[in-house]
Length: 221
Image 1 (cartoon, rainbow, N blue to C red):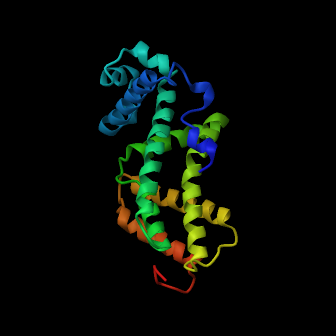
Image 2: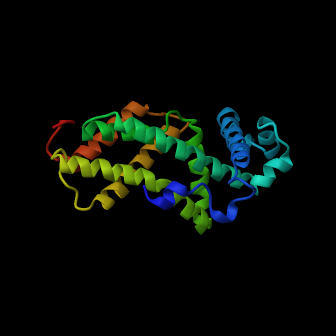
Image 3: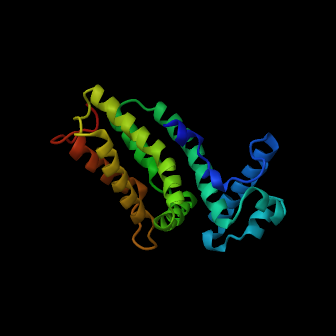
């Protein structure tokens, strides 16, 4: 993961309050946890600043001391959870041996765990804003970079071990494969005919084998 991606929690121009202090960071985290819990429970459309403040046991004024708007909280909540998920994903990948098994684990972590996955709901909201905001687009790119870096590392290790056929360019493969996972994720998020995460993972692995092990149906060397 790049140093910039490791540091990002929100666009610099969006930061407010003494969040660099321990007390400030704890208060900020309480707000973000409250926001994520409410999104999970009621859906993003029902979340209001006043409700976030009540859940965090703070006043609306205290919440606004750290964040400029509901949109700001939503983007920061996404970044906050993504950083936590990155740590969890990397710990899980470290426990798995074999490039194919690591790729399978990566896919499972990437796809929504349910049609109401709150982090994916936040991603959808951010995507909707990106075409109208270069700042949001840059923000999302920074959050996606750890995913692409982890995928590139898995592919590179698989190539080095002789498990994968080298793609023409790893960066091009990660771009295509992440786009594929995004498309499969949308199928999971639909209200009707939602395929299971297991089924979608199997489809993604089939696509990976077509590129990384053409002519082979094996998932391990």
